[in-house]
Length: 125
Image (cartoon, rainbow, N blue to C red):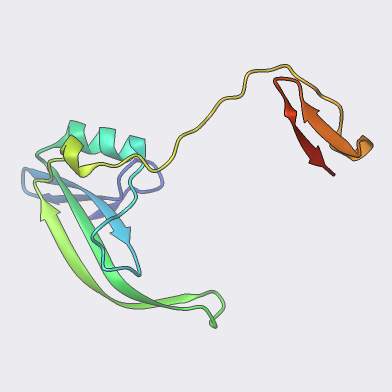
C-alpha cells in the first residue's frame, strides 16, 4: 500500500503481485450515503476502472473540543471495481468566471451602489 494523495487525484495505490488497485478514500460524520467527489477524482477513477475502488469511512465521531479536533470510530465500506454512472452523480457547485468590466469604484467610497445592468437594485452600504 502506498499513500499517493499528495501527488495524485486519488489516495492510495494497492498492489499484490501483478494486481493494482487505485483507491479513493472519503471520510464523513454522516451515514455516508453521499460523499463529495471533485471533477478530477471522477475523471481519474473512470480512467482507472476497473482497477479502482471507493472506500468510505462513515459515522465518524469528531471531538471539536480537542486541539486539533480528533476523529474516532467510523464504519468502513468498500466498493471495489467501482463504476461511476452518470445517474449516481449530482452537480453541487459551479465555478463562475465573471467577465471584466463594470463599475470598479471601491465600495468604501460609496454610500449606496446601483448596478448598471439592473438600475432598480440599490444596495445601501
